[in-house]
Image 1 (cartoon, one colour):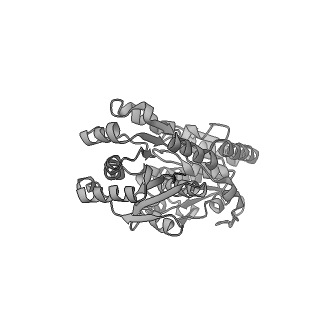
Image 2 (cartoon, one colour; image 1 turned 60 degrees about the vertical axis):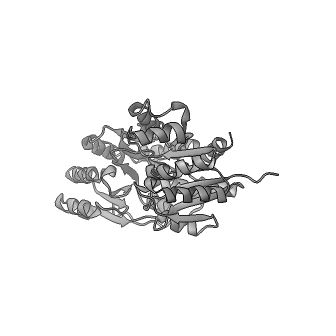
Image 3 (cartoon, rainbow, N blue to C red; image 1 turned 90 degrees about the vertical axis):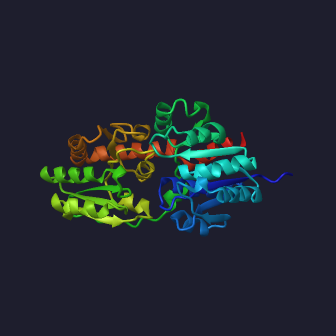
Length: 364
C-alpha cells in the first residue's frame, strides 16, 4: 500500500493570531485522523512554541518579504518537500507563498494552497500574477467577504474557480469540557462587557473607549474587560485615562483561557475596522454570549442582527451604546440572544465539519 503524502503547513508569522490558530488546530486534527503532517514555522514565533509541544515534525526558519530573492532558501524548501514526501502545502503569509510556492511547484507538489485570512486586497504586480496564475492551485478563504474582496479588487489576477470558503471551526467537545475560572466578579448591578483582541489599529479599540465614555455619560454601571496585548495598548490606556473611564476598565492581558473570559461577561463587543473572519465572535457565541459588532467584512456571516446580537453601522458608537442600553434594561433579551448565539455557533462553525472540508480539498 502506498504511503500517504505529507501535508506541509508553512506559517512563518512570529505573532500568534487567527491564522496561526487555524494552522495549528487543523494540523493536529488531520494528524489525529491518520494524515502525515509537517510544519515549517518561524524559529522565534509563538506557533513554533506550540508545535514543539506536539510530536508533529517541524523545521524552524525565518522568512521575510525579500526571502523570495534568496535562491538557496528556495532550494532548501524544495529539499524539505522532497524529504518529507509532501503532496499538499498550505501557506499562510504572502511572504510564505513567495518562497514556498515556487519551491513546491519545482518539487512537483500537486496541491499548492494559500489560506487567505486577511480581508485586504492583493497587489496586482508581476510576481503576484505569476504566483496566482502559475503556482497557487487553490485559495482557501475564511469567509465569503474575503473571497469577494479578492475578486472585486483583482478580477484578472485571481481565478474564481480556485477558491474554497472554509470557515474557522471550534472544537466544541474540547471547549465544553474546559473548566471555568472567571477572571472577574460582578460588583453590585453592573453590566459586564468584554473585548478580546490584539491592540493594533485594525481592532478599533478607540471606539471601545468612545463607547465606554458614552455609557458613563448615560449613567449605565458597567465594567469593560479588555483582553489582549499589542503595540497600541499603552496609548489606549492613556486614552481611557484622558476620557475618564479608566476605572471602568480591566486590562486582562493575553488570555489563553477564552472560555473563562467569556464566562465572566454578559455581552461581547467587537469594534474592528475589518475582519477576515471574526473567530472570537464564534468563541463568544460558543460561550453563550450575544455579540455587538460593526457591520463590516464577514461579521454579517456570523451575526444575525436582532437574533444573536446586533450589527452596527461602522463608527456609529451612538447606536452601539443604544443597543448595549437595550440589553442592560432587558436581561431576558440577553438570555434569549445568548441561546441563539450558542445555537448559531454549534450549527455553523463546528471544527469537525471544517476538517472534513480540508480533507476533501486535499484528496479530491
